[in-house]
Image 1 (tube, protein in one colour):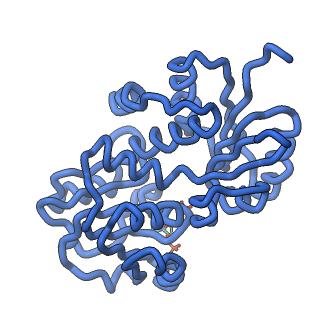
Image 2 (tube, rainbow, N blue to C red):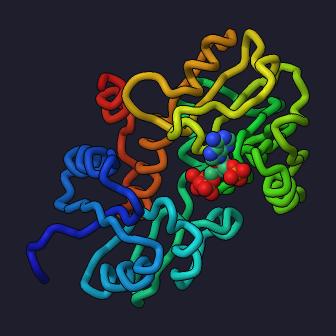
Image 3 (cartoon, helix red, strand yellow):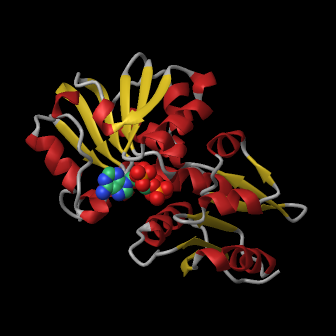
Length: 275
Ligand code: ATR
């Protein structure tokens, strides 16, 4: 037995801007765990080798982010039901018997943020999700399983939305379309899961989807407003939220998988919201 701290980390490309070391550092202090959490900037063609090297050299657990979530699903020996359903893995843990288990905590993170931090009940609500990439893939099943009455996925490339929706048709009322086909009626929850705000853009959708009670949620986060939260507020949203809560809650789910303890997310979220 060594006295080295247990090793964890995040693999992605890029990862330089990540808040995960800060979050997991706070979780570790809370639980008195001795662990390290490092960032690994790994391009797509090096992911498999880098992840295997991490675990064969004693690493305990990894978070995986863009663009490796699908590749991580290929890499692991087993997947949890929710990772299987999403077809994407954001958390890997080395289990006894040298088996790698892949999980996806993104959806649970979003649901926890909506329910616990924002007090938003999904039962019988209408949901419009913008984007049909990896970020959307992780949240469709949890939204439907939490009772959403209807879910529309709208995407710049309409076919991607239609195809993604068809993968989840057994779980509820879900359909896909292009931005131009969005029904201009208020929804209860509007989620931006596109990467448009990274380019300072907002998807061209009818502002009528925002009603007086619509919760507008940008899965992107950062200091200040995003182009989506600015657009939502300018179009009458009473609550335009960024994805800090989802980030912290998915991290807590990952920590739980790794260490068997679900940390208290409140002080961590407060620290990030105060930035
Ligand atoms: P991620 O894993 O972050 O979801 P992705 O799989 O590349 O990344 O998906 C990015 C999503 O953002 C896609 O839905 C993309 O639309 P397309 O499928 O048409 O490419 C969407 N997106 C990116 N830039 C956008 C922009 N400027 N306006 C609208 N949608 C955009």
